[in-house]
Image 1 (cartoon, rainbow, N blue to C red):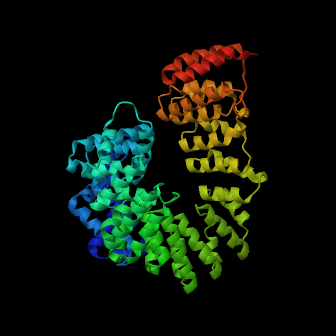
Image 2 (cartoon, one colour):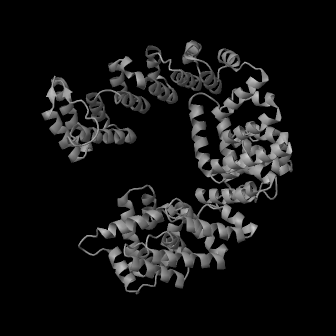
Image 3 (cartoon, rainbow, N blue to C red):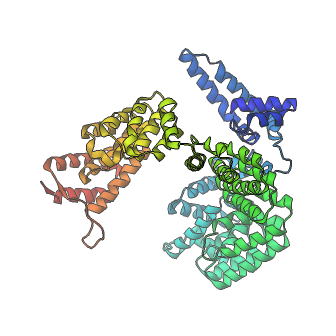
Amino acid sequence: MALMTQAIRAASADGVLEPVMADLGERFGTPYEVALAATKAHRYVAEMHQIAESQAAAGLTPSLFASFAAVWAKAASAGENHAVRSLPLGHDDAVIKLWRRDRKSVPAVVNRPVTDPVWVAVEEAARGGCPPVGHLTTLLAELAVTGDRESGHAALAVLAEWPRVVVRLDENARRAWWHQRPQASPAEHVVTRAAAGAFGAPLAVALASTHGDGRVRERAVTAMLAAPSVELMPFLVLRTSDWVRSVRDHARAGLALLLADDPVRYLGAVLPVTTAIDQRYRGAFAVAQVKAAFSTASPEDRRSLAASSHPASRRFCCDLGLSWGWFSPDELIDLAESGPDVPIRARAAEMACRDAVWRRRVAVLRRLARSRRPEVRAAALTGLSPTGDDADVVAHLDDAAPLARALARDAARRAGVDAVAWYRSAVLDKPTPPVIAGFAETVSAQESALLNPLLDHPEATVRAAAVRALRQLDAVDAARVAPMLHDPSTRVVREAVTALRPIVKLVEAELLWQLLTDARTALRRGGYRLLTAGTVSTCLRAGLIAAIDPDPKLAARARADITRLARDVTASTWRSGVTPESVITTHQRTDLTTLLQHATPALEPDTVDRLTSWLHATATA
């Protein structure tokens, strides 16, 4: 990307950007991607300097990465950032220009200091779980009680950037207040004031709109409509799907009037939450109102909304544009090649290819078939098939996308090309991961011997692809693949673990226990995956060892598995499901008891009690 950035800078300075991009294509990057990378260029400078120092320490020349650092340092400067963002993207009216994710399009709230308690609480709530959402509710309630309108507006602005958090806040608030503690909380104080109609701050109105009492919610909706504000629109949208009819009808009438009177002002705040509740039982009304408002908006306003920072909102706008025919054929091509979202690119490519087939624009199909996006290539190859250009489609037998390879094999059959023989020759002469994958998709297990030499290939990607192909052909030799569990490449180790898991009984147990205590994290994770495919006692022993592993992900997974095993082995007789085996040897009981004592600090007390009782009560063989 650094080389492409430098090339685009030079071409733009000389006024020859379009010919250069036409010559290079988009396999090396596009101006859109360069603009995106330029907004993060300041992160790359230190990284490039560190790599250069590592190269020098290894006795290699550091000049290459030092030059990369200079390129990114220049791109990070204010003047160069402006130059990169102003690069032409081809078609002047292409909507993709509005989706350039530079610093101006990132929500201002992202730049908030991490010391802002509301921002920190919203980030925690976005990760999921009831306690963080409850903490956010309490924090907002305490802020609302102070009556500070400026702080309240700032908190609502933060919430507006996180529509999913607004939905969780609404759900959690009612769940918490239905089971309120005897002592009064700040949230209850706010709701009490709201019920009395004594609130005037927007944040208090927003919190009141989430209360479990429908009368309180209806008063909050009335207050929202009496003094409409952009910050309260997400909460008004939630009430349009309320289960109480009077609240729902009041909110729907108000939302419809606001969007009809001033769609430009309110659509930007309404759209993110509308996409978040689209699948709700009563969420269709808000979606219909947004669509109606979009139909009356000007093209400039539509493009402005399409530049939203929320992926779901961008997808919603694009789906409307594609459904209602807002895009010209050239804009569809630009959108398919440089769209910011996979579903958007896929649908735009489908429509562009359909138009190209109808108009017999084979050059457009060939251009899209060279795209680096697999969904775009698949759509273009599908369009090339009816045109009779099977030779162009057959050339994708070694495509990285499975669907593209399938289309190429179908075209090879029509053209009289033996795809199986082609794959055999390619695997022997110049194996690559796509070639190996295509070979596995076309041959039977009897020809898997051609893949065995590739297990010793110097390239890790080829070794990993060979293991994956053997697994797909159901031709894994445990004695041949087991040594690859110590491969230097993490990718190869993962593939070997996945291939050996169904036949783990054929792997030496001593090797698996050695993996679980290896210094490399990838090997410990792989060893744990293989051991947990065994008996209950083996799973429990592996879990107790991994529960105190220094790798947090492995330790968390082990603790979860131990909790499940503890509940399964101590399940009541009325519980449905198969109870795991309950016979262990005396040596296993002693070993598991010792390991449980070491892992006790990392486990829940209930889990420890269950396992202790089970170990004492289980019969020994």
